[in-house]
Length: 277
Image 1: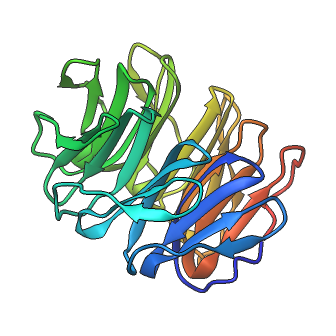
Image 2: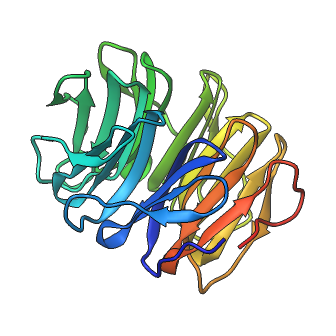
Image 3: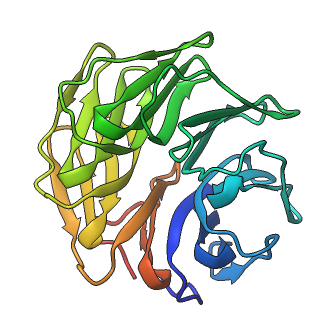
């Protein structure tokens, strides 16, 4: 899809297939209304790494230098994060229960609807991804196969048989989650244990998004885009000249993928072919 920018796009999230945000380098912030992408102004020119929203008028973006931005439906404004470290991923169960992980200072931040505070993670591993099935069932992943679980009271380490570095995580439910990372690593959680699932690639995988245990997407280096159908991962696309950094799927099934030099791919809900550029 024409994005109107040559800046690298790293994150994508939407409230629906006709209300999608994409963000990335140099303060790039785009919005899709179902017809076209248009640029939105943000404070400064931050390097933005992740997006998540509780509603179309309640969206969060994070990035380098401790930057946290909030969109209220009219404009983006900066929030006080209390840190200057790199922030790599944001996810929440509601507008009053938002989590952010930052690898530079080994941080997990939490927003309760009023202010951001630092949580006790219990790990010295750099964390790159966070997502959950509910506010009492949250996962954070990072270096050396680190997986942490939040139960609403404390973060604890989960056993992981794969020591590969993990970058992204997504939970479709309490019994269906995926984590992705270096050298094609993809592991799956069934509610009891994490197990490796062959990805068919050795490329680093940056992000994963799952609508269910039978419909998940993973995007990464080498322009690699993979789809999980409940039994195996299938390579849908590969373009070494256009690395992919973020993926998101609408509830109706539309898939949006973002990457280098303004790349935005769109996979319509009814399509069975590769995403459209």
